Amino acid sequence: MNPLVQPDPGLFIWTIVTFLVLLALLAKFAWGPLLEALDKRQESIRKSLDDARRARQELEQIHQESKRILGTARTEAEAIVASTRADAERLREELKQKARAEATNLVKSAERQIEMETARALQQIRQEAVDLSVAIASKLIQRNLTKEDNQRLIDETIGQLDTQRH
Amino acid sequence: MMFAQPEAHEAIAQGAHEAAAEGFNAGELLIGHVSNSPLDHPLIHLPTLFGIDFSVTKHVFMLWLVAATVFLVVTVAVRSYLRQEQMIPRRFMNSIEALVEYLRDSVVQPNVGAKWVRTWTPLLLTLFVFILAANAIGLIPIFDVVGLLNHSVLHLDPESFLMRLTHGGTTATANFNVTAALAMVTFGAIIVAGSKAHGFVKHWKNLMPGGVSPALGIVLIPIEILGMLVRPFALTMRLAANMTGGHLAILAILSFVFIFTEMAGAAVGMGVGLVFSVPLAVGISAIEIIVVLVQAYVFTLLTAVFIGMAIHAHH
Image 1 (cartoon, chains in turn red, brown):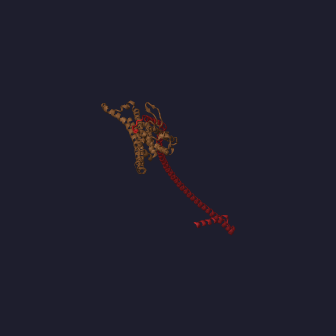
Image 2 (cartoon, chains in turn purple, orange):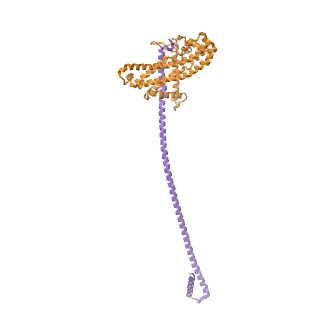
Image 3 (tube, rainbow over the protein chains, first blue to last red):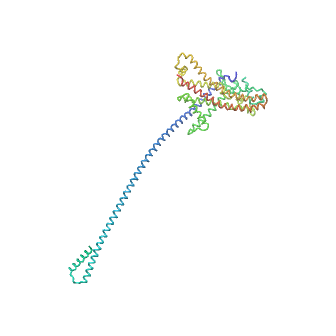
């Protein structure tokens, strides 16, 4: 018989035995652990992707939140600046007003004092003048005149002065 | 005539001039290079049990060599891969992982369904790598190199183990006994798959298609049984014939060198070898690489399809 078509039951059985032993060994030591690990890795990749998506959503939320907070803070800051500016303006206005009033008062009192001083000086000068006149007149007239005469004269003179002045 | 192989081997090992002297027989050389080593002259004699000779022939030895190589290569790669802290496939492991995921997701799952993937993936993976390695080892002329070394350097005793290894083809899957055994595994897997999915009795009842008159069973059941038996037969013949064919073609083309040497002298033989035989043999060897892959894939795919058919039987 041609060796190409020679039946060989021994080889047939050896093949089945060899194959089944190889199958058992590979299934136990290679395919089983590998398939399990691949499944596990697939699961972990899916989980990582889920986590990444969730993290991205959270980040998006946080971003929105921070944007909102930033917006609020900005409007508040603007309000604070505006009110501060108004306060400062008012204060400045007040101070200006006060200073102006004080200055006016100062000028007024100075004027009053000047007036008073002037009046007093005039009074003194007048007194001095009177005394001086009396003294001079006394010297000139000596005893010719009584005290009453003197007084009358003085009054007359003052009256003359007054009329002259007015 | 099948025991004339030693001469045929001598012929290819010792070169053209001696072959010419002895008379070159291309037919014997071809057969000797693709068939098993002689059954009455095995590598290791083992007792005959129940009328079956369990002696270890060349093809049994090749099967063991393939199984051991496949087991070591795959297991070492997978184990060192799984021992890592992070699962980063490196070098050879990349191809194993790609193969495992491809077979699981594109061959097994579409046929047997998601529920049975884990049950049948190991079997189909083992079928694929085993057949692929057994096919591919035939493309590597290990024992021809041993024969050549013996002729020029070693000069071993013809009865030594290493010399006896040089007799017979290296491609175990070219032997229909081997492919029949693999097809038998498929046949068994189909029955197991059907029984697991539907129960043993229901699996056999599925031979009778539902929704037809019981009277038609007289015709349909024999057809279904025939179909059940034809599938493993087709698997057997497809793989064995493909593996034998390529090797026969390469050997026949290379034989032209010796035929022409015998007819017209060494110079003409060399010329034919350089211009015609070697380039063509290289081309066919390249095609063989594809054939080796495709046949392993086809066997695996068909097994997956048949298992799927048993699981998703028409009710």
